[in-house]
Image (tube, rainbow, N blue to C red; front, side, top):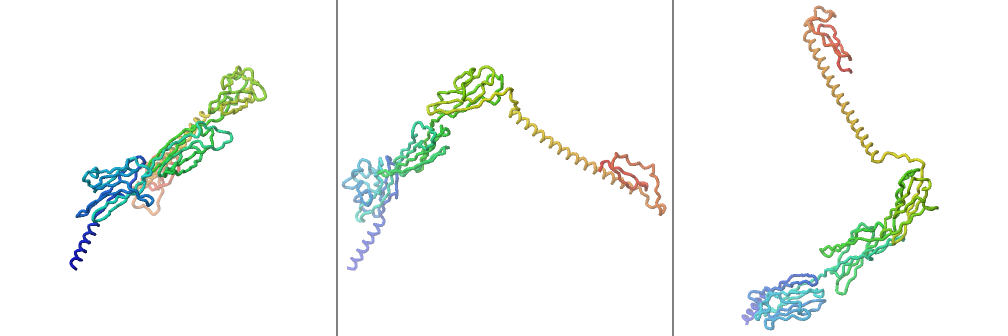
Length: 443
């Protein structure tokens, strides 16, 4: 009896050990985009000795509920259940053989859908070890549709200067949601809105708001959409319509009697372009010698006092009418004209360069003079030292008497060379007398 119990314990231990040697290998997670294809790997690692595989079952686990996807049975064959039948298949053809090989039961999802996102269980039923299973999490991404549009084809700048939405950027039905940014020189602001759709995707919408004006016309506006590691850009150029910006050119402040060929031109910056120019003279009518061509007044003949006054130009386009004004006064004689600014600039530059060169030359000459002075002084000191040495050499060793007489210099000795005018110094002469030595360089 004891022997039977021992055998039973041994068999049980071998069974547990064999069961521990079996394993189902799977990836922990997989992902794919809507419409793409993805593989869910499932490989059975058998024990030694191997156990018998009775059946393999794939199940979808969502919100705690299991749903059969595909089954592989050695006796009954392979079956894929609705709604996966048209899009799920076993990767290895050996699974579908009459004598199947079920060690690799990887399945392939084609035409991936958002509803496919879930956890999937691969379960092996074996004999006598029982069931072995593992699980993979499948994530489905949805690439968004991105577009950028102008709010209206034509933007009109109004005098009220009210803000308005000029462009909209939309990233629709994305999973995960996109991030929208704007790149522009415009001084506007952006608004953002996210909408979560029933299928789990998110639509992101951003409006760009600005005050339309002449300065915003032809400005570039770029929408930048970032989705995961992708960057999508789209741009528009604003077409802003505005009233004319008017100014009158031609009066230079020097209209004098009998001057010829004067004119006034009405310049207007407008979108759309100006279609009508209208000239008038404040508190009067235009002179009789005026000829109007397009946006220009041509004054025929010599200038007279009759041309003086305030001239007004009204410029009109499809948005509105704006006015330009200039006051024209007539003088008897021409106004004195100063040299052109360019000539003044050139002369100033020449004078500045001349001053710099003069300063440099002066500094150089002073430096040279100082060097020359130091050199000549050194030479004079050397000459004085030589004379002193000569006197010491030719002086008598003993005096004739205790009393030294001052005698005239020995004519046999060569006198010192005459020196140019300047300061002098007294030194002992070679014959015992006094000799005057001149320094050649004034002190």
